[in-house]
Image (cartoon, rainbow, N blue to C red; front, side, top):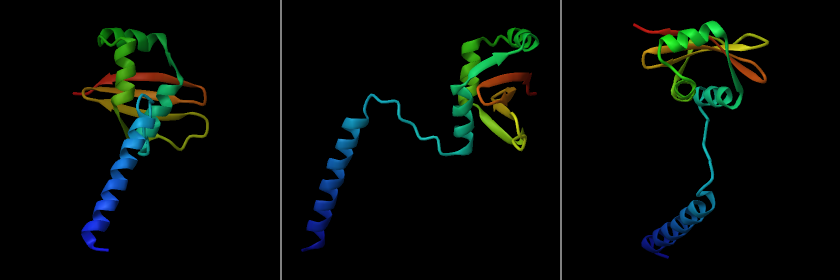
Length: 120
């Protein structure tokens, strides 16, 4: 069998497989969170978020509502150098997004916002 025939069969089977996957995976909320940054943000976003009253006033002063906060927590970048991931009970993560820095304590069932700062 010539190379061009083998290539044709391969590309034909590959395209049928892609169409098959697109048909079965369409409409489903599939995602691949393989990187450490994505896994931490996905883990935090699945838990109930708790905000302390003094942090709530800081958020109001910075004009950040709960929707914007959830966006910051889902699209931010985790700074692992400043984070404390070696704690036994609840790990603390520093999340940066543009000019805002958020300190989040990630426990088993809840995520607690401990501090919010603006970066200069």
